[in-house]
Amino acid sequence: MSRRGFTLIELLVVIAIIAVLIALLLPAVQSAREAARRAQCINNLKQLGIALHNYHTANNVFPMGGSANLFALPNTYYQWNGWSMHSLMLGYMEQQPLYNAINFNFAPGVWSSYGVYNTTVLSTKIASFLCPSDGYAGKSDINSYHGCYGVDVNTCDWPSAGGGGMQSTGLFVHWNAYGIQSCTDGSSNTIAMGEALTGDGQGASFGGANPPSRYRGNLNMAGNDPAGLEAGSQRAGATVLSSAYQNVAGVLQDLQDCATGFINTSNTNINDIRGWRWGTSATGFTLFNVLDTPNGSNNNGCRLLCAYYCETSCSFSYPATSNHPGGVNVLFADGSTRFIKNSISRMTWWGLGTKAGGEVISSDSY
Image (tube, rainbow, N blue to C red; front, side, top):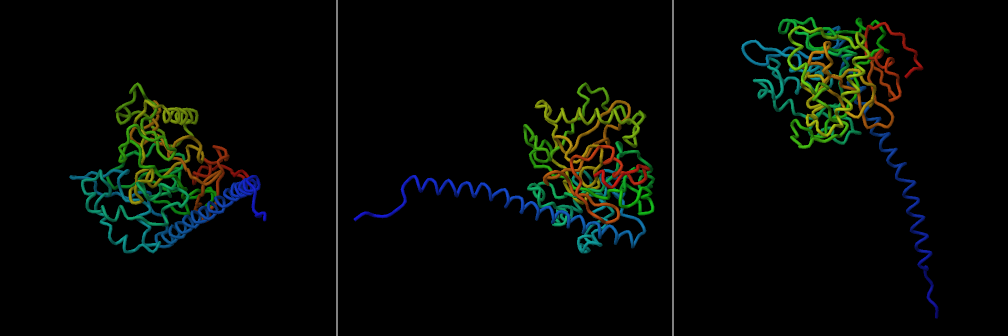
């Protein structure tokens, strides 16, 4: 009596059909998952927008990009090491106990003489500060969302300690606060916050990796001055830029040089601390600028050492970046959120990044 069953060829055909079906299904599943993650990212920005506007209602301005807090005795304050805008609006996003736990007398971070007083609160992870599409967010670095300081190149024009007077082309700046009234370009045409990938923890900074990772969420801290011609010279009184519009060609050249330097294997100064802590006001930790277009280069920022017009300690490009296919999520000053494509023109992007630049931007240009 013959026994019925599948032949080997029939079995292989069935396996091949199943494999094809899986290959067709997996991209759809991944796309659905990314759509959900992107929606959560947008929701995070919306929640931040609500907090910003609640803060504005109470204070008639948005929070400062960074507050002035004692860094070291006898009377030392640094813009790059104060409490961030995120910290200042914690009470408006259901984080009042965390806000109450901060000792605002002292600057946060490992660099401050008094950072130890705020170590626990500074390292606390907050879900609404983390983009779910970034697999590294929440590991070494715990902030995905950054306030926009416009097309500024330099951020270290020191006024008297804690005395205010800082200015920026964007909506946020250290030691000063802007409100809706400052957005003469229109709050719907002014970027408030954008997202950025966090570092992978395998750079030359806290990760200590050697050689450091070239992951695009890391950044080039070496700048573009291999001959060392500018080292230490800019604080002596060289002219510095407040706006990239003052030397567009020079800034664009610097961005290109930085991108080239990032992939240079002899460059070991690749930093992994983009978005290091939400509580620290340093640019790159909680603030970004629009010099580079979204996901526009192979790195997540660089130190600009442009001859004769940059301040070597405080001149950086910190772009908006993400793992969302095709662009980044952005919060505008009116509280709306939009997905900005990578293909946006640089001048349109620069115009959206400024609050009072007078640029005319068509609604169909991004």
